Length: 383
Image (cartoon, rainbow, N blue to C red):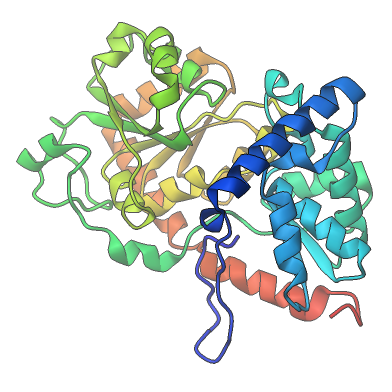
């Protein structure tokens, strides 16, 4: 959860963020790549799951963590949970934060060289023996308890600070053509009927396995006044996009590059519908709630989301703002989007409901939950 600024005052604390990746020298990076290569080779030839498969930073995190005298170490991401497990073996107080269910993540082709046994062991040990645990949804918490018979993790939603709304720039940078109808962008206002309904999707990387194929199929041949905007790194997937996206959709599609975190909410707020087409496989995708759902709500977009367990949970907490369609079903998605393109009053109602829901759930509230758990829910004597 470290991407969010803490709510507690730090003016009297000696806390600081230490980045490790950028500090690595060229020689260290070369060695890390060699280790990763050898680690994957050992897994294939010897059936030996090892930490080198978890990326170049696992060992670095462990070594750096040992230099610091902390009351509690919380592992996040795969390399982080390996480091946390080594600290636990040394008698340190540790916890785990599972943004994804790592041992149940990624598509089959990406899991072939993945250290599944090691990841399951790390998850089990930290969830059962650690003093703190958290994850992103009630659905994931239920699944982890069932799988590992562990103490129920605290549910911490992957949301952003409410004060981010104060930085909305009200500009039309993704959709400059809107300026002829509206001088400034206000997420709560009705937009002109002449303006196309804008469907938006974003991620760090835009490629296969993220529900985009279903979106392209759903939009192919769909009538009405609409346009599609994608934001993400597409450099590695340009050929895939060319083959996956029909020409009729490409004509109405704009692709945008990544922007700084401080600008992202403003760019999302230019659009009307936020698409969250997560698939039900792998299980981690079915159970988690991605941050895009909450950012759509915070920006005041009507959300069209697939019926994963995590996203249905998010819909229940954002009454009137989320339309649920069947995962992997283009016809169901077409019906949901077409209804909003044709019924502008319904679209406005959902956008306004999203704006209200986005203003009720921010990182400030989630941070309070973490602090409360640390103060009251940690076993006596653990900290």
